Image (cartoon, rainbow, N blue to C red; front, side):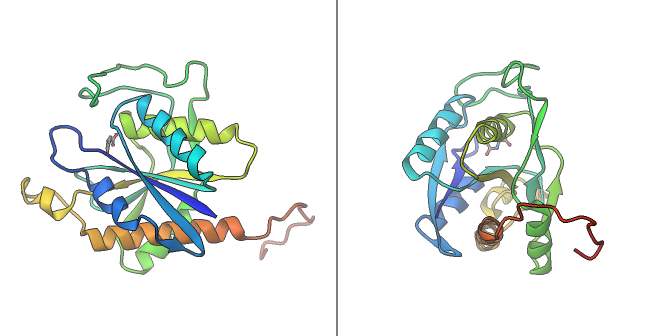
Length: 219
Ligand code: PCA
């Protein structure tokens, strides 16, 4: 089984992006028998999804976990939903600055992550890794990619799980902005490995085809 794990290139005049700096450390590792393939995506609307599709065509992954940097957040943010809206507060790396534009004209207002985010959150926090469920991935390029991915997966015949995690700054970045929270690369990579392992285990679980009635409350 293949897992595709992505991070973004730096944006907003930052020299690095904590998502790619963390993700690149996991290239080629295995989690629960699945091989992790990593990809750096351009922080440009549309083009980021094209690059992601190239990676999906190359590795045919069953789990697609995209990550991005969210400076100012203090925990790994397991994004619950992506909304059909591009509303940028500053230009992306391609100079695009859409305001209130749909990502997919006529598409659903939102898609939910199909990662087991509650289980991941519980496992991470019980191991001492700061994690939270986030109800907004914003309206910039990360939400754009997340929405485009979930739209693609909603039309895919194969069962694939996908979702998005926002990552805090690294200490190196926070040092330049006193008072801003940060997370060490060791903590981030441990958290990402756990998130992938939980998801792969979920995917390997035998599927229950029929619902039995009456459903007992202890089931
Ligand atoms: N974070 C931005 C885009 C790229 C990234 O790493 C975001 O949260 O939309």
